[in-house]
Image 1 (cartoon, rainbow, N blue to C red):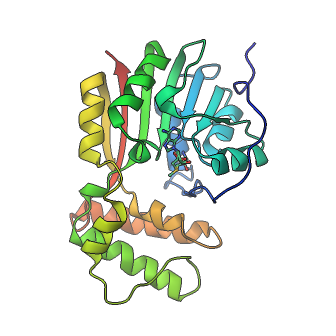
Image 2: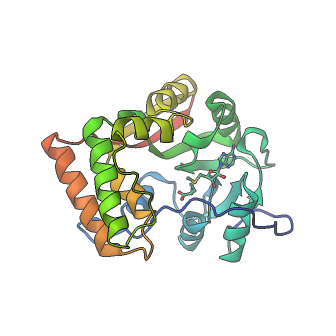
Length: 257
Ligand SMILES: C[S@@+](CC[C@H](N)C(=O)[O-])C[C@H]1O[C@@H](n2cnc3c(N)ncnc32)[C@H](O)[C@@H]1O
């Protein structure tokens, strides 16, 4: 029987705080929507999963709770230390040169691929780490899908929450939201680039465009207010449905070619 996690080296030193994304948003059926989706697309309990770019380890912990054999890696010392502090024995590793003796049934990348460069190298590695029936699972942020309405909605909502003392977010009065959005994100891989790089290497199984701005703001909330994030999610979802906001979340599953 395999352990829930891969083997790991000694805990590392905390340097900076790793990024936070809320895990507590709920669907109308009351489930965490990321976990619900993963429950639909991941192979069953007992499968071997690589969480590449695990951050603070919340997702890896949840997958282990669900009975998967999880190996969690992150290139950041701070992220590895935070994961370990929460009981997830993450490994410090760059996906670009991570090897494992056994193939994985799934490689999950939750909000990590857009931070990775070059995309081609890490996706080639993800493909090589998968077994013949292995699945790549991406839950991503496509910043290039935002338009002026999305950037304005995001900064206005975040600024109001900051003014109310509920979010840790610089207000920057007078700045053009579109310029600010571009300058804040242009170093990250775009949705278009991620889709193209995945399409070249994998057989696409399912691609969905989803809300993301509310998750983004949720990560800035000082007290992780579930009701507030759920309300932002509801509003964003309704604006997407009515065509006044574009989706900026990308969820896909793809198989090895
Ligand atoms: C935005 S955080 C997402 C963390 C977590 N997966 C989540 O959903 O909250 C992105 C993480 O990817 C990690 N990362 C970036 N490039 C990486 C690479 N080449 N290999 C492994 N981890 C990487 C970063 O250190 C960071 O912890």
